[in-house]
Amino acid sequence: MNAHYGTISKRKKSMKLSILTPTIPSRENQVKALSEKLAKQIGDLPVEHLILSDNRKRPIGAKRQSLVEIARGEYFAFVDDDDDVTDDYVAELMNAIQIGADVITFRQKATYNQYVSEVHFGINNQDMGFNPGGITLRAPWHICAWKRQKVKHCQFGECNHGEDRIWSTQARKCIKTATHIDKVIQIYDHQTETTAAPEVDERFIAK
Image (cartoon, rainbow, N blue to C red):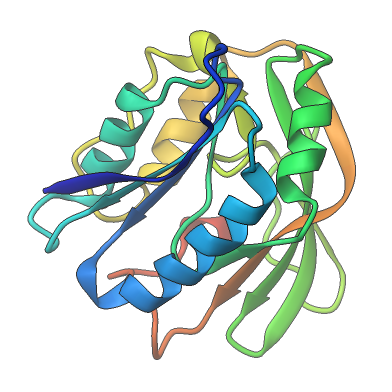
């Protein structure tokens, strides 16, 4: 296992946000581009970007769990190595954190192979099947920003598939309040031919 920091604020104040990225060595170029993009946004803000890489010796669920356990932020959010964020991603989350809700939701542009949808995460939403060309409603998932103390007992599990659904289902039971950023700040692009995931992404299985 190789755990390392992408960008850490130099300010000696309490960390507000941890951005978590599990990865593998073959994704070095992607994670480098993501890290550099986030570093520009973080600057001197009380934000850290944590990256954990290994040669697939551990399940993705175990890597996600390790990242949560070493995170120092009041809030944490996952950005995977094949995802992207808008230029105001960090700024929008930091503004929302000031409200103090249990979870921060937002909108996401999602591409699943050639199909595109805008995913709206929300505390009152139920998970619906991927809706190409339209809006897909989702309850909060691991990529949203979660108040760490509220979900610290939730577990991803030792698995390579469905760990995001396992964790998110637990976490939703631990929260009561939410702040919603009503704009796209995260971009998901799944291409079956290039993904490192061994199975279909649980977020896009029709319910």
